[in-house]
Picture (cartoon, rainbow, N blue to C red):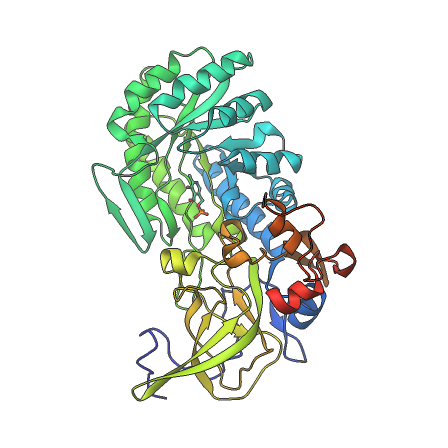
Length: 488
Ligand SMILES: Cc1ncc(COP(=O)(O)O)c(C=O)c1O
């Protein structure tokens, strides 16, 4: 079939618009005999019936396996070059107490970047020593809490934080491990990286300022300098950007070794995942091997010991494990010249997935409740918000008989969707359900109308909305029937 010019160049009409592309979906995703998509043995139709839509669904075994496989790959490759690796799960990608425990079970530490994330990790029972604390503007209260509870490391992000962290640790009578976040001048995104000599961004300190700042850290008796930290970007598919950054960091690391110990080097996160069938990120084992080779070679060249390496992946662990389930509300064909596109509007949108609007991120979509032999049509999956930029999937092909009431699923939404969700237009944030061995359970309940009204100081005690939002009307996910029917 001729290419529809309304579709991007890379997207052609598929022979079968029901296929689940390899690499995009949780490993357990498949079509049931009835045609519905199932994740970990639970079908989309069961999920929608039990929990309503929109719904975030996380394949527990998939997330746990990715965490374990990543840690094992890095352990193995860095053992080969004579050192160890500390893997921190970047909680900003997705954090709940359950997920924090999955990560700890897999042998990972947790990287938090606010008092709220710290609270969730602690509520999960994560030992404070396993936590790293980030942020370019940690409040005094956050620094105080972090030092008081004994977080393992604090990543210092600016000169002014040195005295703040030192004072807080001093108050609590502890010696706080710290890293210094520097800008290596390397920016990476997907296939490309850009190396500059100067940085114009809010995170980290200027590379050239690091020796003076490390001396200031070392002069504080309540601080223990662990090493440098650098995070070069996100959605990085290959090893080259990390290689350039590691090389620059190790030159600085070697310089710092002259005046004292530098036991560790933190290379940050950013390993990419496939959002589209055309995406081809390097396998984690290859990235681990490539990074180990580079770090070993750079240390060898400088005659310094290979430090303990720390990394902070988030997306690559939880992103592919999650999908979002929506129900189609309306469809609307738009004819542009000789060609047409079908707008398919769902019951969520930019409030549950801001990434397309924020970064122009691409996703794909499949009908989730059935298969269809209808001719594929070019669709744009739109949300229900009052923004024309409220698009979840810019372009994909779905069977042409897609109709209101159909369920659709968007894969690879496990990272930076729920964690960036909002209440725009007063939509409640959807529940998160974990699926495992044919069973589903809520790990974060969805927000009710009562939740949405709870912080409004003008709502008088006992006032009712007439929307039927009573405890009795709630289903197991905490959503009201009326909310499912009329508000979502
Ligand atoms: C400092 C730092 N570490 C780790 C990460 C995690 O990145 P990713 O989820 O892409 O692996 C981020 C993401 O923004 C970050 O800023």
